[in-house]
Amino acid sequence: MYEIAVEQHFDAAHYLRGYKGKCEALHGHRFLAVARARAAALNDIGLAYDFSELKQHLRDILSRLDHACLNDVPPFDGINPSSENIAATIYSELKPRLDGTPVTLSAVEVWESPEAMVVYTAD
Image 1 (spheres, rainbow, N blue to C red):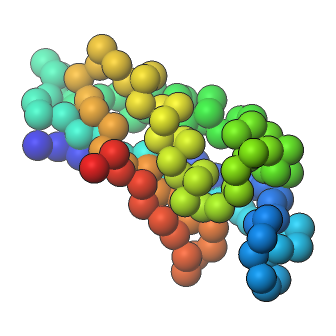
Image 2 (tube, rainbow, N blue to C red):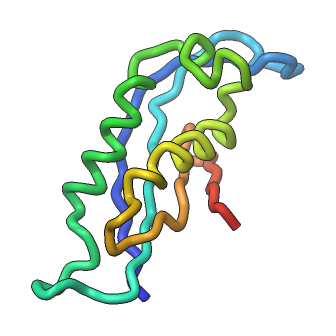
């Protein structure tokens, strides 16, 4: 089994509704999103999947989040834009883009700082 990963940064502001502490106030992060996909075999030129294609899919999804107040962007206008919810949302939007390809989405990581991250898997 092979696992490939690509990463992409995006800058966004958010606040956590109902949080008791500093994160209840509007603040920003330079988020890092990492998409991981698995393949059982390599293609005829020795690739599991083209990194540039996976990165473009991730970039397309993140483009609506970049330089936005996440609380104003669906679905975060209805759910908290926590790193956990951001990771699950990216996963749910990326997974169908990989249907019919030789890879399966295995995980999405969202880092809100160099010291704090979450991993979302479908398991």
